[in-house]
Image (cartoon, rainbow, N blue to C red):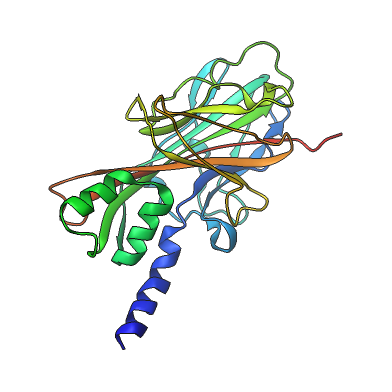
Length: 271
């Protein structure tokens, strides 16, 4: 009976680990002023679904383009039949669509599942805290929230696009150090991971092909400066994601405060 109970607990907990979250526009390369439906996606592979969170949990939804930031929360129509809203972008350039939720989601997982999740995502603060306090065999409890950026190429911009490589102030953020749409064919894409505004060393960053996302195609750790780099094919839709956590006190429901962050972009089909 104990074995059956454990297996049932693990089965119920499994979907809770599908935390990959991102903004998915219908196309990443669009014409100026074209209507671009988008969805908010969570999970990966067979567990990938539309995000079912409430609009009240979204604290920031904005478009940062060549002319500055525009609040786009009015464009959110969560739970629509085919999309979660529609955006249109005026003027050529790379537009950075930014989304941030509150920390209102919770997890309470059996120890074996939580420990596996901590190991897979490289959450060394949680592993160290649980080992230090002798809690590695206890349930893992966290509150968590989501941060996401999507890079939409509008028209055929010329000149630098500094908004692409500039941090936008997310708690956990993947900041490309080069514009992926302007990379040389053989060049890697370097990215900087920031946590609470500072470079984050030792973070596990994964690269996913959004058309075949059952498992990442590359996994890297950030160096002492919070930087790593990926060879990204110049075709298809791509997602980089990272997770980080910190121990908290005073919350009766959680021992850790976790953030999931992503960066998505995509290339038009070759002519």
